[in-house]
Length: 490
Ligand code: NAD
Image (cartoon, rainbow, N blue to C red; front, side, top):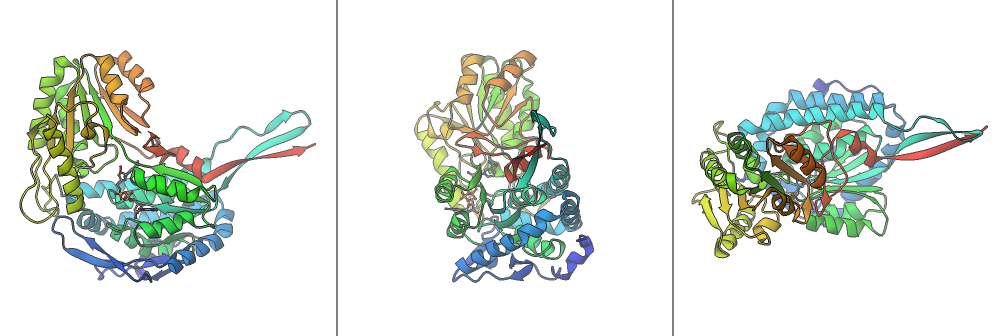
């Protein structure tokens, strides 16, 4: 089975069409057959870009059946052959980068200048995972029992139900399907009902580049995802989303004892000691607290500073937040776009209002602007208590809290004192303390003098209410490929 050339992808994706809105089921592009449709909007204006028909229960059944039929043939390909298909998809994505960037910017409200890097990262993620599946690790074959040879086989788990969120629509889709397909699984993927358009354009490319049924894409909202999660022919469910959704998916998967991969929320602490480089910190937080309008599960949203640096941190962070340029998302100078929806903005504003009512102060931002779109300013809230909801719960907006810790030991305790465990950073020149903090903070990623920087080779995932399982890296493949023992008695 030789992979199609990327230029063949133009056959089904019509460049004259603004948006592709068809499901991909068994290699065919077919509109969802549900009774309702979900409007895909531009959050910067509220304008409906496309009405996306919701999938019917029969669509989901057909997609799962197609994935099931495709599984034996796909898993029988060599890892190199599967990688060739995935690399062809990566090439097509790269060739179509500008169009994907524009769609992602419009549908997810992202500043246009920020999106090409996201798409490039998706291309790199696919290529890395395609290659990593050619190099699965296991103990050496050998005689671990006298007179018998043992070895390990790594087997794909089967059909994967993959459910993605709205904040990085294409990237989260890639993080789900790339390791699963590379490892030999087949996939039914559901994008968020709020931001399906980039994933549906990918469906139009994949229709020509992957064998039928290997990757199926179905539109729809929570109930469509719930049907997928509970489907008896789905062996594993992989979801990135909120903690509430993760719990529901875990409950739906329990009767079938399905494998689960849950990438949920975060509440990343940023521990700043007296000897930190405040200028570097402010530059990093400008990008990583407010990038994607703070709608990032690893966003640097909870600064904890020791007394000798607290004042300088507040001043530098306030100036950095106030300097962000906002505006229409198609303006290349825009740095801070809108939130995903007016409902999300009301939620974010509510957190800030309640924090202020409880005694915290706002040094910049904090007011809902007039005008169209779900814009909310970069906001710094100082002095909330450790048990305040704005410290304990995920806000998912451009809002950073700053707290003072009496000393560095208490700073570490405050950092750890949340239900989440996804990402953290420590800012200090003391290498010994940094290493101890990295060891003691039970977060899936800990950065020292940096925040958020990731790469395809390193794992991403959480502890506690942030879920379990890992995206990216060779560890992602572990979830989709079960190890098996084969023993041959001599
Ligand atoms: P969400 O939980 O509302 O939705 C996520 C997806 O789940 C959507 O596709 C939705 O349609 C689907 N869904 C909703 N109810 C479902 C159900 N009962 N069964 C199956 N599927 C269902 O999340 P969101 O608002 O789209 O995304 C924001 C959340 O995602 C935030 O909490 C954020 O922290 C989290 N997130 C986590 C990571 C990570 O890697 N840990 C990355 C990005 C986003």
